[in-house]
Length: 258
Image (cartoon, rainbow, N blue to C red; front, side, top):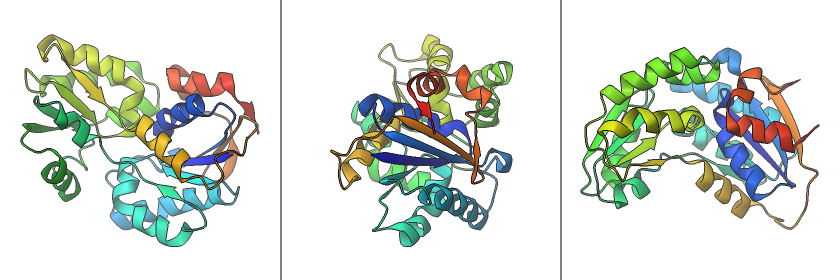
């Protein structure tokens, strides 16, 4: 079995690590274009073009499914990717986990990039899935870039800024950017002093990984646990910044580089 994941950068690590835990034998393809980051401020047309390039590079290696491990790309490019690649290649998008967070009944904060915060897309998800829960949208300028570069000081500053704008008593935080899942522990620590004691964080990696495996046509086919990294379609090594996060270390330790 071979599963491909695409993102602008290392935000795909969370879903890739989740897949590795569920299927240790799976061959994984990580297709990104970190030189083009950030995607958030780009036009929908630019995001779609970049996402298509990453997806096509991954699809050339004939995976059994492709995960769009990026909220921005899922918003702007999912329809185009599915139109080009399905039904031959199942394409799985990433959606913020608003519904399970809101189902717990307490106040919800959605941490997302400035481009996503307040967008018609996110407001639509809140309208459709938040129910009666009180929801606050919290923009996190600079956080994804800081995570991408493994800049601890910048991560801490961006997290502290967003935490200061998260309402007291928040019971659930939705991580609306895949990069944020890599620093979930730091986010929890920053918010916990003023949050509801039952605070929960909701990422999308586990759900996306499970859905990808459900979409594979032959789930019984085994793989060799290889890891292939592509940057703008060119074979590359796992970025050094990836090893600063538990998910990156899981992938590096468990895989045979293809």
